[in-house]
Image 1 (cartoon, one colour):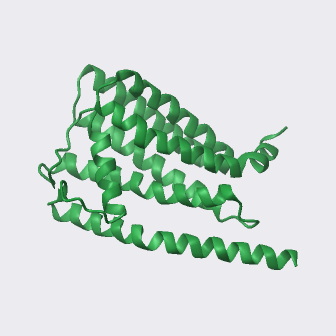
Image 2 (cartoon, rainbow, N blue to C red; image 1 turned 30 degrees about the vertical axis):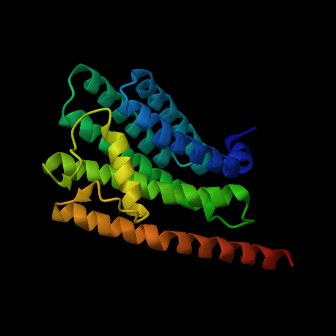
Image 3 (tube, rainbow, N blue to C red; image 1 turned 90 degrees about the vertical axis):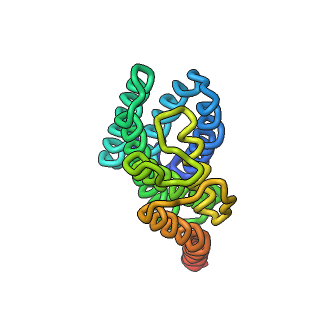
Length: 225
């Protein structure tokens, strides 16, 4: 079985698998990291490697694979530096790696989800993953700005600590879904602009993604009739 046959058979199911993987990393691994459990930091590297494999099978693009491998190297180096001597360098390595992961995954998942053909359960889940990647990308951007500008946030200090990922993910999803609990707030003008953009994506994306999926399903039914 060659790579094209593997991709044709597993591309759709992998959308669901990647969604589960990302959700585990964000909503299980990150909180456990915040508790200082080192074993789960090591698990993040293994899960990131699985992301690389999954994205390669879905996309088949060498560019996507190279980008994910670069991100994996950055995560590994950042983890080693964090153990030896935590600093802004490893913090920005983590932020840069997850920005690459988020943008590459968004591109790959969008191509697979909105490809011609029947809209399956896995493609619907792929649209959910595409929505989640918005939070991943903005989490990285918030980390970048917060590391460069002290007190960019009220209620959250961006510093190299195991708890940071959980805090930034929490803030990003609160912004994306416009939940706004009020415990963390943007103070710096750049962060406020990023929050406005993410909130716009959060409001417009569900309707846009749903409309596109419905259009593809109607087009597929018209071809079959």
